[in-house]
Image 1 (tube, rainbow, N blue to C red):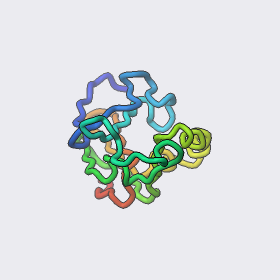
Image 2 (cartoon, helix red, strand yellow):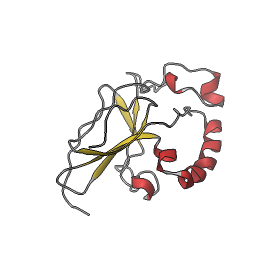
Image 3 (cartoon, one colour):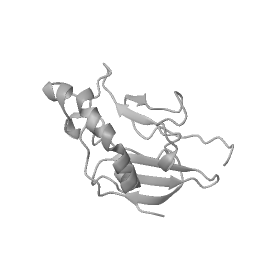
Image 4 (tube, rainbow, N blue to C red):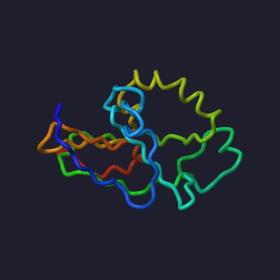
Length: 152
């Protein structure tokens, strides 16, 4: 463990909101598994704070296609200089859930996802090792087919 501060840039442009942050609690996602202790969820929003451009019956009752969400397909960049040590791109894009009804099956299925693999939880991702400190930065939940880096 290191006490060195690491300064990161935001990995995107535009307006985004923070959800599940270590500013609220540690571990930020309720677990230390799979590097989630200090994880931050960023969600693209418009100037009114909305996460999606469409709102209809699906918003309230079921899941929604990822294309509805403002952050889907937006460029994500490395927040720090380092070496790419892992890349995974092959997971399908997941549906979105703004409906409390749609969250229940998702929550009940989380333990099975954790047992399957890191990729089942993180989805498409890139992991960067920092050069001077023993720290890794993971960019996760990336759009399928969008990862354009190589290890090394």
